[in-house]
Length: 448
Image (cartoon, rainbow, N blue to C red; front, top):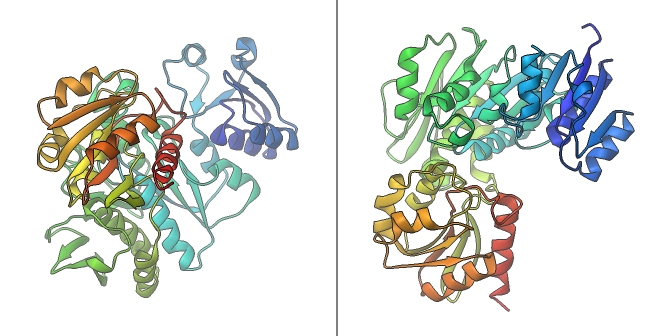
């Protein structure tokens, strides 16, 4: 490829990795970040002698680019992106850029919920099978950095809608679409159809040699599939024994059926429990089956996988009350799956930065299972407007310590305190990980 002037916007995991790959491939590369760049990424840029700036965007240098690689956290509405596009400078994602320089097989996983667990579970199976596999996207190291500095035969990649937005030529050999529920609508003009279209970009460029795994009973996916002509081989999964399903539940066993190959595993032997994790296990098992991983390896890996941190993570039992960290539940549907898995009365912590949430989806579970809600956010008005009449008790908290203390007062022996906020974390916390870590620390402090 010819030498280009490449500008990378954003100096985090994605941007720094893209800059290294651009440098390794002989391009003229420069990185710009409106915020501060973390020391570890500065060290990486310095190691490869890549020039960068932080806390500003030098417009003239950015607009002199032949191509811009944009970190997924930067919205298309950012003023500098509008100016780049006005000059008809191509804007691509780090994943798109990395795809140009590798012929590895790509297993790509997206969805509103479950994608991190499914990605890590798929990676676990392939690693157990002895494949030379890399983990990338929203989890693991930057795909671009791995392409620049390592050599893998297969990559398992978690893709957000933001990453898919700026992907054009990249192709998934196996595309996995877990589900689609309203999320990030503030980034999509509050139009659901825009968000759905972003998710379905995971299918672009697929041919009849490729595979598409999806949840058969998702109404939004089903409606979109009626409008599209899919060339890839289709492998739907379903809780029920659907005639067309490639993975389904029958007599307490999960059946996987891909062409001539069939395998089964008792549901109660799966490492991950709950309905959402049944779907995650089905999707991961199908991906591995398509890659011709041995059945006994798939079974063993599905049985010994350890759960993802901050996703229905058991923390402790104190005074007979179970505390569960589901901080990764940053949208309503994710909270729905958490509540679906609860078998005891629940004290629920909700709140944070609302992304245009519709709470009616969890209303039935809240009325049935939730005895008290603690609203933890800067502005809890929307939560009170919806939930005040639906639970016996509701309270506010402005810190995690206050929230956990109020939950302790509401909960009695046999209850579960569940942090499953439905919202982004950025009003009171640095990230959902920070929120989850604070919850665990506050809960563990109760033991003292």
